[in-house]
Image (tube, rainbow, N blue to C red; front, side):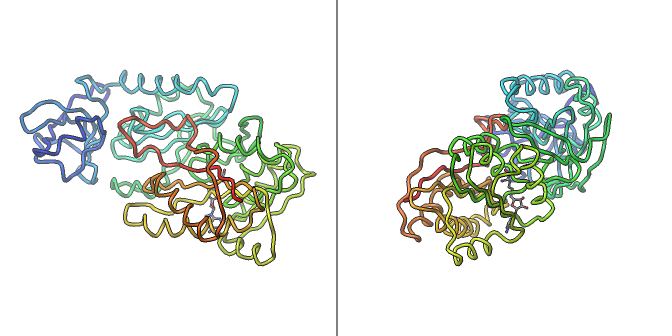
Amino acid sequence: MSHEKPTGEVVIAKGREAPLKRFHPWVYAGAVAEVRGSPEPGDIVDVVDSKGNFLGRGYYNPNSQIRVRILTFIVERVNEDFWAERLRRAAGARRPLEGKTTAFRLVNSESDGIPGLIVDRYGDFLSFQALTLGIERRKRLLVELMAGIFSPAGIYERSDVGVRALEGLEPEKGHIFGDEPPPKLEIEEHGARFYVDIRGGHKTGFYLDQRENRALLQEIAAGKEVLDVFSYTGGFGVHAGLGGAKSVLFIEDSAKHLRWARDHLKLNGLEEIRAGFVAGNAFQELRRLYRERRQFDIVVLDPPKFARNAAEVEDALRGYKDINILGMRLLRKGGYLLTFSCSGHVTEELFLRAVTWAAMDVRREAVILKRLHQAQDHPVGLTFPEGAYLKGFLIQVF
Ligand code: SAH
């Protein structure tokens, strides 16, 4: 495994080479004319055009719609050194974050040159996801390399995600190396402290991608009444509190995670702040607040993914429009809306359209003050636009 030579050649159908020539790292089943040799699932293969010219080298999965994920566009060995170099490169890119946070994404899949591998650091621990068969097969090697290069106290696997089914894989999770992570691990981001449950939290434990946007809220929150919708463990609301907010109301349908939001206020010395916690469906609760004529100075809308694929985009846009209507109605004149979409299939332009429809529907004038994206430890490969999934806007609503 450590001196892997390609065991096959995947020939691209004539006229289907363009994405690969633009260095896009996915080879779809429909673009494959022929498979030469007899590569096993997960093996390294060369991808060539119909004349036999080399296009790229990657790992193969005959059971996925993405037949090959390209690891390199040059002829080079995909051996242990290759993986180690990619991991080191990813770690180096996170150095500017030191001092700002003790938790960050170390490896962001395609955009860090390791398709299918997500690694997040939480203090001394690593939490990772193997999303593809190619990574699953090399898990042992990658864990060994991560242990050596990143020197964590322990490594925990959170491959308990549905997308693995698209690769023919079952969900998996468990403690894999070193010490077991504590049930409540403490991290710090821009001066705010949070507990993370690596074993049972959402994603790999925390929504690291929103770090910079939470810090932005802190800057504008002084003296404001803030509504943190889809709050999870209260990340936005805590930052609002640290920024001097007058009050924070959290809405989240997971009662367990909402309890953590309360703990997080305490952990940050904010037990005196006027805070409310509503466990329930955001759509219903926002309607209720409207009926009760409640008003806020800042509303944060950070919903879960509404579209999992292209077919769901239209419904998702209706969802985004609805939730933004409900959020805008609760804003005082001149108030701020921080609104997000983490659906990769909904582009920034489409999302903005949905938000615009919402403003028209409630007959409010609104301006974009800032366009928001995922934090810089979630880089986006220039030839992999799919990597840019989180988009949002800071909007002032009159
Ligand atoms: N803002 C959070 C992350 C939010 S993720 C942070 O910064 O950490 C989206 C959250 O919405 C999840 O915690 C999920 O449990 C919750 N959620 C999903 N559907 C919901 C609904 N209909 N009503 C309320 N909360 C919901």
